[in-house]
Amino acid sequence: MSTADGATSWRRSPGGLVTALAPVMRAYDGAWVGWTGSPDDAPAPFSTDDMDLVAVPMSAEEIALYYEGFSNATLWPLYHDVIVQPEYHREWWDAYRAVNRRFAVAAASVAAQNAVVFIQDYQLQLVPQLLRELRPDLKIGFFLHIPFPPTELFAQLPWRRQILEGLLGADLVGFQRAGAASNFESLAETFTSAVLRDDALVLEDGREVLARAFPISIQVEEVARLAEDPEVQQRAATIREEVGSPQHILLGVDRLDYTKGIGHRFKAFGELLAEGSVTPDEAVLVQVATPSRERVEAYQTLRDEIELQVGRINGDYGRIGHPAVHYLHSSYDRTELVALLLAADVMVVTPLRDGMNLVAKEYVSARSDLRGALVLSEFAGAADELGDGAFLVNPHDIDGLKRTMLTAMRLDPAEAEQRMKLLRDHVTSHDVSRWATEILTALRAI
Ligand code: ADP
Image 1 (cartoon, protein in one colour):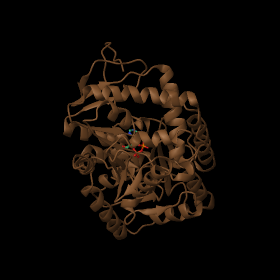
Image 2 (cartoon, protein in one colour):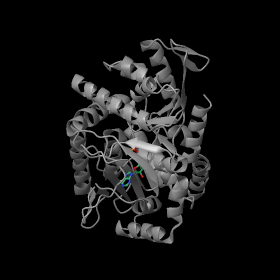
Image 3 (cartoon, protein in one colour):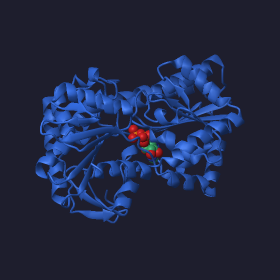
Image 4 (cartoon, protein in one colour):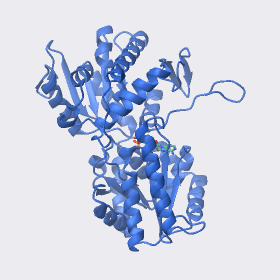
């Protein structure tokens, strides 16, 4: 973006992928090949924030067809259980192929001989194969940050074989959950000539591809350090006062995305208020809903629905100066975010489907005071790791969600402490640097 004096400064894009990978890139000293976020923008390679960046340009039309279209209105809903109907357009697919090719060419031109290239996420699934054709010397890893769907859903995709073959260009394909890796293996066996033998997919030319789960994490230290900062703790105390010092602050922090189950959360909370199970004086729900993909239609509809729900609940149960739901549609810096995590008694993470959910791990990392409770959807990747200490829920089961939210609010401090210890034992010993070491070691060992 341009600053007031006409110079250029860089702002990192929101979401889990960049949060997880920035520290890894700094530690490994590699080049990050990516899109700047604006149309037709291709500055020469540059360094910022301790990272070497190589920009790949994209036109406004490609952003519409490749990014908003095929990536976010075809693949994203298809890979997230078809919560919203995916759209299949041949023009979008053509743009997806063209942009993937451009990324492959860019990576091929900056990678050293025999280098490791690590490709990230659903927008670039054709790059492994394209890059291998250009540079057979490279070691190629791929990581999918979002879920990988079962055959029944993936089979809808008109270009299912091409996507699978694209991914099979990698030596190692990493997923968040073991179930996703086995979905990929059985799809590859069904729709390509690959055969599963001794845990590896064997291709016609004899090359082997490994598919495995590597659950991603966060930089635990960064969140923990902020949470120990007296100013941040003071800010958390101020937030509690500002929302009226209720007994229970429930918190949701999500991109405003239909996968996140924000509406289910509001429905449950609204019903708890309606029945009098909690009063607006006892409990408030703070919902940070980060603006996201605002040019995609499904996101505009979602925003309207969510804001209608907030208005209804506040209209029915709020009083002057005391809304029942504090709804914040904006981005925050890390300090304010951690202050919110510290202010919350119950963190409510209720996605209908989520690759991992880093916010759940951030909450745990912030709570060295061993207080607070985590309500976590079983449909988030994080449920595989945090099931012992969190309260797992099926967000579609509104009665179950209500019961679980109440249990979490009424949790006895000794049990809260015990649960938070279990959560912290796992998260603090599995941070993103461990993830990076494990996946890159597995890749190098091939
Ligand atoms: P996703 O990758 O689908 O957005 P995750 O929960 O895995 O979901 O990651 C979201 C990341 O974005 C977290 O690191 C979280 O702290 C951050 N984040 C979410 N909302 C905001 C916000 N309003 N301001 C700043 N950072 C945010």
